[in-house]
Length: 418
Figure 1: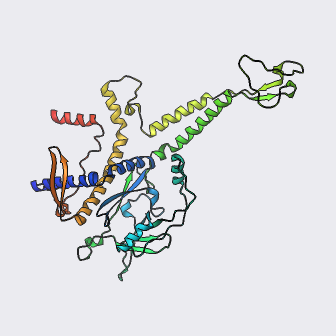
Figure 2 (figure 1 turned 90 degrees about the horizontal axis):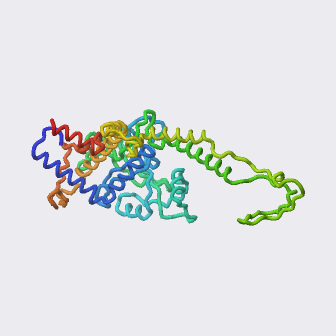
């Protein structure tokens, strides 16, 4: 808790922390694995998103991973935050049966129709090629494509646009649902001057000063990786040509046509019309791989390691023996870039937790009992909706600068000596 902290605030913050940890790590079995995949994709591609919302059918909060290509934003918006965008569209896929259930429960006006489009994105082609998956010839009829647009609309008579969520069936182009995107009280009256509620959280690896999407390792070393692959192919081709003998054989040598197989310890009879056999054979001479290509590959690999900040000290494979203090200094220097990345991920995660805190303040049952594994064993306690009042700020307890056990040990030793 922040501000003037009292004993009741500490106990309340402890209950909230344990309850949210239970929600994310116990009730949501896949949260940790999805977060692991998100961080890996963020490092490679630069940008990844999550969508935090309350699912009325499942009766719990949902944190959904969203690829950058599935969240469409206006072109040319520049380096702006996702909260500043007046329009963003989530392209989501649901089975037709799920849309029928939503329509029956009153969430949608009508069920969605099966999507007849079959365009394949470049990223899908790359993933299919890498994993060995290919599309079946039969067109599937049970998937529907929905466009959920978070935008501003002027639906009343004052002419002022207000935040709404509009869900459209991509196949039939019919509006399935229009919902407000601001908080209301129990009677439906708007709160906080209809301030828009943000559902999406942007996780970025390296900030882009000229665009909305962040940069990843693929942007830094992708071209270098392609160049190294081309040089490696040239090296393999040159070695193959040098190892596989080929050339011309004169018809005057008298060798029968077709393939000529040689057996160890045996000679093959030929009809020699005169002269040396070597005079009738012209062998191609290939020098093999050029050393310049090998030097260029080594140079590009070193540049790629520098851009990816992968040093020998960080990988634990140092060729030289150095003092422990020097190694720790090298590791600390090499982790400076990663520390900044950790801090950006930590900030995004903080925004995601604040969204979950808000959902609990609105949709949590008035009294909920949970059982958690504490240091002293199993502990059962109750959490109430009023524990998630807006006066308590959620701050994750994490220091992105403490990226190694040695850094934490050094900090603890300094504090103990002091």
